[in-house]
Image (tube, rainbow, N blue to C red; front, side, top):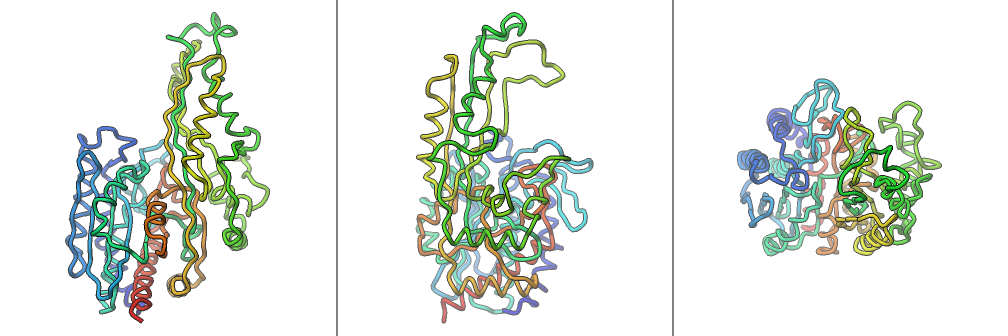
Length: 470
């Protein structure tokens, strides 16, 4: 493939068409169902689907068929099929639902306010990962422009990923015959450790998501009158969390939440730590004086990719500070995000967490727990043809070698696909590099990196076809 010719098609397509469409996409507050229970009535998800569908139809590769599939009671899914010239299938995946607003956006920025600044597009969802449908078709168009063969391509854009992809298994079953058996899966919903080379994600953590509450009273009472007799609901939850986590180190206590790091992944972590140095942790917006966890950069990488962790991501039952009276509150509830090592059994982990949080409630408090889990993913070994294609694409577009990395987040679809298609190869990558802050304030898409990544995808598709047709 002529990568220069591919760039001559992809770069203007990005700047003249994809970028304006992403600007409009960012304006749509199509939060994932977990964060907008009334998403159907609000209609924002349909607005986002319509925007992406319209662009894809107007920039369709030859022979493309597109359908917006709608199963009753579920979020919609965009299904595209592009016929190929070789007898094989590539599956390209992305999503268009978004995380909620989050606080802390800089002045002039906001989740639904697209802003172009210093080569970045700010706003919720552009990088995570509204760009994926556009980039997938752009990569295929670059192949067709050069008259190069490619496999049959199936593109799936779901609308439930940020809620754990709970709608996706039903769609995969519904579309099983139309999907076929892919030998290559391309996913553009992951990250990069820098913007100077191509990064391949080779592992993803799983997660237990839980809502935990403790109730001690029917109504709030004066804290001076009741404290010392009535137990604190906050302290009850703190005692329960101590069963899961050593609060002094962050280490998780339950053996069901741990897994050994495979030797090949450990070797990749060491290589990554050597290449990045202190960029492993300086990319995070630490408050003054805060020190990173972990004894060295290898341990820090393992900490965010192969260790279990607990984060409290939300709370209820607590009034704002400005209206907090001297009242012993009747209940406290916390949202918990427990990340799991890639190879941990999520069902076993969920059972262990549920057991520890509900047995023998401190002070006899009423404990309520709602929890679910999703497994992580550990990639198969990279086939020689794919490794060569990734290396060539990275060198030609960035001037540096490609590298492998684990991700601390979850993409539920990868575990599903890994189980369904054990012989497939995976190109899991994305634009969520340093500072891009997916799910948080000031999220941005690095435009130049996204353009180069699109060319890399096109080159891998060409190499896949060449290998399959040889």
